[in-house]
View 1 (cartoon, rainbow, N blue to C red):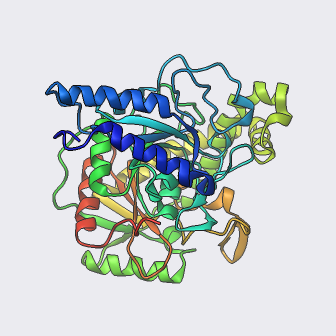
View 2: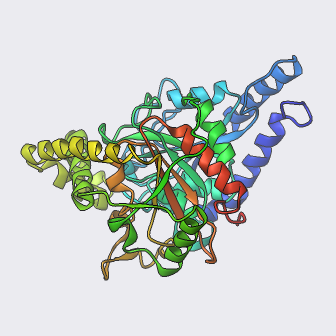
Length: 430
């Protein structure tokens, strides 16, 4: 497109037509912004025609989770009760940055209501289906963002991650997703959930494209460590993993030379602290609406928000105090290591009609428990890259590459290397 061999408008028209044809079965897109997209594509083409360079994302169609402000539209945050909210007066900062780099916003994407879930089962906008098996969940809460990329509807999307909402759907849909260092990217114009944990980040089908998106969003272009010291998280992160997936992880471990294994203390408490902080901040944020319009919430979301609002202040304070100590313990691991590897989810996507996973021999709700391996790490605020691990199974599985504070560059470089060597990579598009 940048060379003038093909127009941005042709790319955008192709994406719009594909969404119109295939989205009904997938339920990834909530709003198609066709007129806006065509106008923006025309502006990109005009820059090229004038001899200019529209940027690294020239003509790339992208979509955003339905909690990013889009000028002129209500920001639903996945809630039916917000469909009549006042329209946003301007685009979210992240949207502005992608369009400044030449990207073209085409659609808003499905999510769990108020980003509270790991399934993208939405009472108003429907359940997003996994492109690799439509009878299975896409994960959440950024499920529409992940499914749109995995299905090939869009090459780039944005999501948010509080407790795993980028990493879980990336793993289940077999694509790449980045949870940046907490505070690394602007949250302006993104509907908030939990200030202590919220981040935004991109989804793509390759590690190289993820790096391009990261830089376009304004991520630091720091120098990557060319020979990172890699370790594997032990203990909590070695249990509740499907046998075939565990074998694939062992094979990657062996390929990397036999990784040292490190145990992270108090992981169960870290997960509990993430739950408590999420519940308390989410409940407090939505308390006025809960008092005034409780029956308009999705019941599954409402009940958890009410429980969070009733949480004693002392419990929340104790969780915050523990979070600071836990972060220090995680940081200590990076004295001897540069990257830590762990599963993103314990196995493949669960079926929609079952909507449960097995944890410690018991069937538990997927909507609340798919973050078993992502929630504890959210508490530390480190950058984490989710990537599909190539294995013998028919459905995707994913790993987390965890880096030191502010070192997204090393994670992206390692992911590109392992992708080029055949260990990471998206399955064939459905």
